Image (cartoon, rainbow, N blue to C red):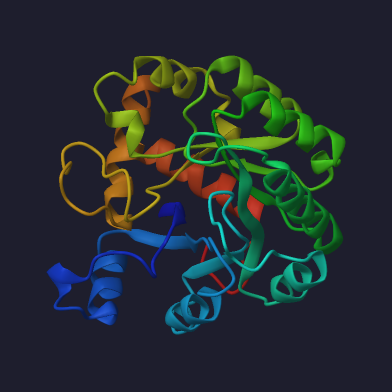
Length: 261
């Protein structure tokens, strides 16, 4: 069973599905994607996102505020913990640090990250980490705040082996998106080939980062098959072996309730 470990179903394009979310979901499930994790990026839109996926037990959710979201209500630890009590909620995030789009004094971003780690520890759920051009500080804050207690995943990984190995030492998983199929991603493919199989996840980050051969179209969960196929090729595995391993890794990390195994 294919698992898309990170997508934004409330933001996918429904143009090809006559703006019918139910039709979109029916075709996604029919494609072989049996589980999805719909990841929050802010609190304002979280209720709508949660309601959208309610009819689909195949979809788990997370709660958090993306590091690039500005002029948003800051997530307080108690609020994150309360929202994470939802049985369908399996993680805190996405959270982390992003110095590519944010400038100036980023103390607010650091505090937001710390609040998410505190919430994850309080509710005992793993973290979904977004990190871009903030390698050293991301690792430092994870260590300082004791994120090892809950672990989690560095999603849409684009860094090098050194960062991957340090994340592994902290008990984290590494997730690869459609970027693994892009020309010019040879260094990233080396990491994917080297990573322990039991710490590897796959994702689409839909509707972003559409993999080859669908570049130019909006991304959607069924395209996670191309991520699985490319990583299997890199590792000399049958695609079904890679799919089974990433499915088992998802179950072990996120422990989704009420979903088929």
